[in-house]
Image (spheres, rainbow over the protein chains, first blue to last red):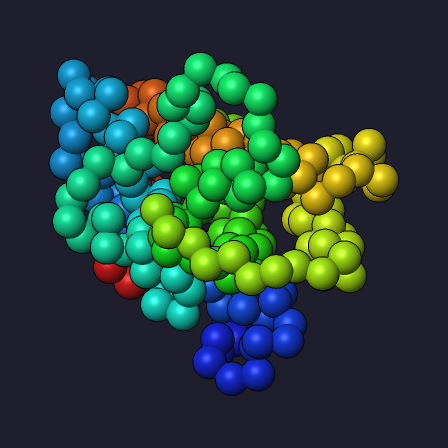
Length: 149
Length: 85
């Protein structure tokens, strides 16, 4: 598999960032899956599911490296063995949202490292995070398809 | 949670809007050509949440699949040797 270095001249072309990362992501994730399969017993399906989920976010973060605030934040969370949570619901009963402000706050809670970003940086990080997320999802779908055929 | 908010110009809001729009997949982009940045932000949040849910869902499905798989199939060996672990 060809992979391109992700160090030089990648700032202008976001897709080039992703190419070498995809390879890293796939190999990291597959390795993790093998490990999980070998070390989990049949009675711990929920535990195994959590480990796979964790491996998914780890692959994303490791392949993105420390270039990005979101991946640094994810790596910190993973290393501290903290539970990986992303808020799904609004914490308070729905009060009428005050336009841009509250939605940006919601976004900050969804993107790792969000709370410490200003609006401009939040947007850049969101774009990168979404790219890596969709790549990871597609990777998992591919693994699913090839294993179940 | 502190966040420094610089004053955003109208032009920057348009750029923000088009950038947000470009993050969404085609299926979500359809009605978003003339909506506010706020709505786009909301749609972006909704999209990220759905991606998180997909990761969860695929994780549990992969877990179920694993329980039915043999640990040392020939395919697994091939993949392992390619990975070089």
